[in-house]
Every structure is written in structure tokens, then in C-alpha cells.
Image (cartoon, rainbow, N blue to C red; front, side, top):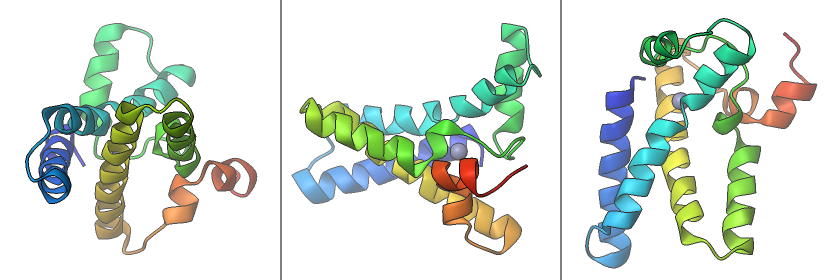
Length: 141
Ligand SMILES: [Zn+2]
């Protein structure tokens, strides 16, 4: 799923959730959900840098645009339930509403990724694709 599709899905989701819960579109909530839905994909780029595939910043931006639709590797830290759970804990511990808004943005993004993955593979791989524990300890590359 490309970045534009994620922006549209998260913007629509944020507007709907905001209207249903508050009766209007809260702009703080809206922009945090949209930004979180885009920035989550930074982990694809981080993974590529870590593996030594990318060295220059220009290549990095090109790579971000190019790989949006596919999984080049099998481990993306921001795309895990454990990372999201950590954000929920931090949001509650520090009474930080913005962190919880980020969680909404990440969940909308993951739902969109899940649907895209289902459309290309024909199956839902929620646990094997998005659980850090499962990826690290039960699936070896
Ligand atoms: Zn994604």
C-alpha cells in the first residue's frame, strides 16, 4: 500500500472517529493520526539502512517511495503489536493523549496493511506478520 493510500485511509478514519466521539473533527487528533500513519513506514527504511542496502539520504527517500507496496524484509519494528502496546503504556503512564492518538494512527495503518496483504496472499497473517515475539523467536529466516 503506498503512502498516498495510507494518508487517505488515515485521514478518513481520523475524521470518522473524531466525528463519532466528539461531534466534530479535532485537528490535533486528525493530524497526529495522519502523520503516524505515514511515519510508521520509516521502519522499512530503517531496516534497509541497518542491513547496509542504503547509504545515501537521496537513495533513502527513493527507497521509501519504491518499497511502500512490498515487504523487502520480514521485520519492521513499528509494525508490531508490542511496539503499539509500549506506546499505549507510555501514553497512560505519562497521561499523554498525543501518544494514544499515534496508536490510533498506527492501528489504522496496520488494518490497511492487513487488508492489502490479504488481497495479495489470500490469508490473514496477523500474528506472524505483526507480533515481534513471534517474528523474533518462532520464525527464523
Ligand atoms: Zn505499513
